Image 1 (tube, rainbow, N blue to C red):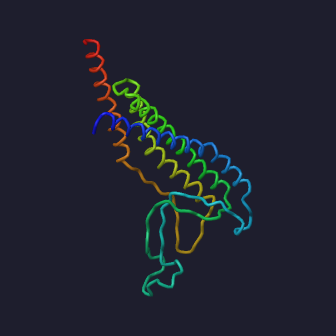
Image 2: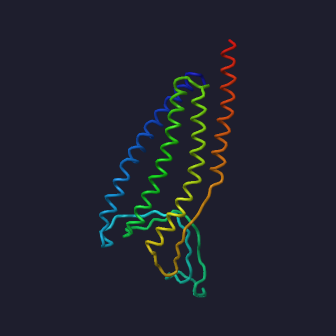
Image 3: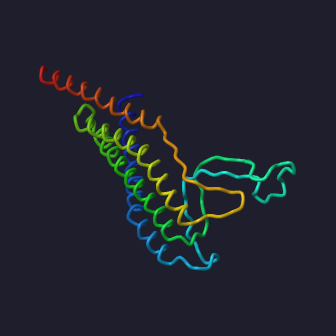
Amino acid sequence: MTASKRNGLTVWVKRFIDVTWFLFLFFAVVWPLVVLVVGLNIAPAADQRHADVEVFSSFRITSDFPSPQAAPDTHEGELLMSGQGRLRLNDTNSRLGWYLSGGISEVLLLLFIFGLLAMRKLFAALAEGDVFSRRNVEHIRVIGYVVIAWHVVSPLLNYFGSRIMLEDIAFSVPGVQLYPGFEFNIGGVFAGLAIIVLSGVMREAVTLYEEQSLTI
């Protein structure tokens, strides 16, 4: 791949990141208003509510769950299924649950936007042909910190948020138990650390480049 083609690809990636950044920034501004308006207008009747709450939760389904497909030889309270993941509770009447769900989404969105901003600055410099510079080192390091922060903050927010939401919503279905879920992605943390290490290598390369430029 020639230098002109590489630069052209960098420009296109930079434009894509620009559009994505502005789009998510718009969502970050509008979303709190949507959360507030919908939360203030949660109707008492279930068929008139449109507030769906997403919560990261663990679940257990036992033989007490009324199902025509249940085996006849199962004992009372016997565990049939368990797992965890993002669950959507449709048409909730819990304002606290709705606001917490919206607030968690907003915090993670702002964190993503901050990382995307660093990436945007990085590709803007690369598109201008500015490869070996200390500002690029800082942009790469910020991206690494954001990756680590995302994989630490996200599970904590989801755990404590789901704990509060489930207590407030008081979900009650025979044979179905919901409780806070916690999922920590150690691979994401290592990926962030690898990016920070890469920024250190990049810093050494920039130092060598600056020394060679002064020598010449």
